[in-house]
Image (cartoon, rainbow, N blue to C red):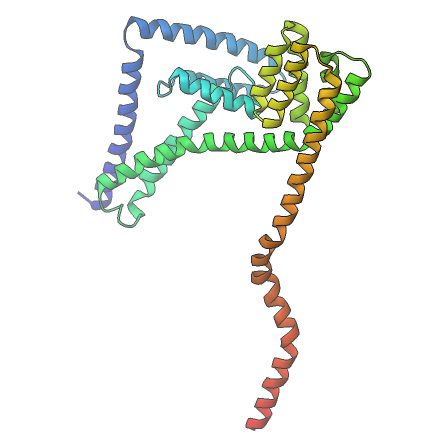
Length: 320
């Protein structure tokens, strides 16, 4: 057999082995009567989510169809348990994705990304040094690429959540100032939070959305402690937790909310100014290396260039 054909056959066998292992895992997780009952329950929940999503995404049928297919694939993947799905749901909520299909879509993206990385590793694994000569090494590299490909989307979501938290932390002192003004005007807590959400809509849309959701929970449920704790869980910032703790204690012990909010607003404003001053103080040491690498050579060339040219011309004239 031609070596190229043998190598191609080995690559196909490794891919088939990966799919066979996934199929065996699927059969083990979904076999038996309990697995069939769970499958029917997931199918019913999936149909309900598809109907709800179809009502919400009528204006974008292509995007709705892609998300629906990814959601179905994510619901059928047996590689993730309920505890891991709950963890992903919290991370997706903190990233701003509160849809019912967010976790399923993320799981499907993780699985597809892992398969793509594994397929690319199998296809181009023969050209890797110290790996392409051994089929076992290529198989291990394929499994490692599959795992890395499944981890990458989760890191992207975590990065988006971090950026969202930083944006909300930067605008939180302004929101607290507005909240103090609203409470001083005699508004209730729910009305004040709704007013702050409306005013912050153009300044910080993520913080406005979280405040609007908290105001809706306060209006519908009436349980202010639970609504405020949910707000702290979604945003996941120490300053927000301090705000929720202050509001909860004020409502529990009957202390004035306005004074507590004013003190907290002043504290957050000072902390924000201190963080900006700290970043400004760190800027000078960080600029040393780029200046030495990019700016200093240009300055030396401009300053010493004419002298070097005259010196070279003198040496050339003296040699003649």
